[in-house]
Structure formats: C-alpha cells, structure tokens
Image (cartoon, rainbow, N blue to C red; front, side, top):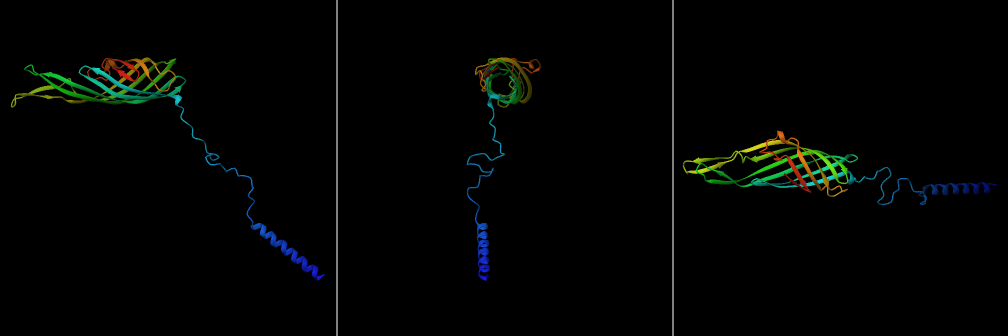
Amino acid sequence: MRKIVVLLSVFMGSCAFLSAQDDELPPPANHPQSDNFVLPGQPLNGVAKSKKIDLSNYIIEPDVIFSFIQGGYNVGASPYVGYRLWKNLYGGGGLTYMYTGYRNIGYQDASGSIHYTNAHWNTLGGGVFLQYNIWKGFFICDRFEVMHRWMDDVYDASLTLNPQTNTYNLSMPQIQRTYPDMLLGAGYNLLQGKGFFMPVMFSYNVLYSVTDKLYAVYPHGFVIQLAFVEVF
C-alpha cells in the first residue's frame, strides 16, 4: 500500500513538472495573421491613399507678350491658371511682367539739332478672370488686371543749355503710374479639349476711356491675342 502511494506521488509530480515546461514554450508559429499585418509596399489599414490632382479641371495659359510701339517694343510674360468652377465656367488668376524699350528717341534743341537717347519702362501686376467655354473651343472671357509701371517719362523730357560748355543736356523725369484694366472679349482655343490653353482672342479694354492714353498698358483699347502672343 505504501509503495502505491509513493508511485502516485511521483506520477503526479512528473505531470506538474511537464505542465510547467509547456507554459514556458513560445506560442505556435502557425497562428493566423493579425489585422495589422501588411506586405511590403502596401498601405497601412486606416491610412488613405493620396489623391492625384485632376488636371482636367484646370486650364493653363502661358502667354508671351511681344509687340512693337512707336519708337520701341514690348516683351514679357503673362502666365494665367484657371480652375473649373461649374461645368464650363472657369475662374483663376495670374501675373504679368513686361519690359518696354525705347531706342534712339530724338529731341530737338533751339538751334534745330537733334539729340538722341534711350529709355525703358517696367510693368508688373496681376489679375483675375472668368471664362466660359461655349462650344468646341469657342469661349468668352472677362479679365480684370491692375498694373504698376515704372517709367522714364519720354513725353516730358527737356533740353537745357549749359552756358559754360555751350552744349545741351537732356533730362528725363522718372515717374510711376498704376492702371486698372478690364478686358472683355471672345476667342477660340487652338488646342481644343486640352487643359493647355492656346487662344486666338479679340478683347476690348472697358476702362480705356478713363485711362491716360500716353502711359496706358493698352494704349489703343483693343487687344489681339494670337496663340501665346499678345499684340497691343
């Protein structure tokens, strides 16, 4: 009887020891994958993918300004970007920079001699616009701009005689002017159905009648835009 009790005690102790060994073992390797497990290159759960910009909602018009004026020329750039506001209606804005150069401007002194000089103007500004695409590339557009100009005043230059050297000195004042313009017109986009805008457009400056014609950005009121080129 005593031997049976001893054997039972040894057996129970062995079972307890083996159970303790099993508790220390790591969990099985074939457990199901957790919800947070992701493959390399896959987005994490709950993290939204970044959305790409839909360029079909934009129109881009990278205008180049080039024209000849009396005694000089204009050259510059006027990039504009628009966004679809509703169906075929776009709104946007842009910046304009233009350099105006005058060459060999002649001024006559009291003796009848001609004195020549050069001059330049710098124009910087910006504006906003609304454009409605009517049908198959045809559109109407209204653009409002404010332009500031730094100018050599070629219309108010003067010649003064230096009595010591008996020569004439030419003086030309520096002036600044700010002009608002509103161009209302219609045209046709040569890149029909494309976001890149290449217009042929005819516009009129509605504010022309209240603008100083000598220093105006659009001295004739009308603007003809050929593709990327604006001709004043």
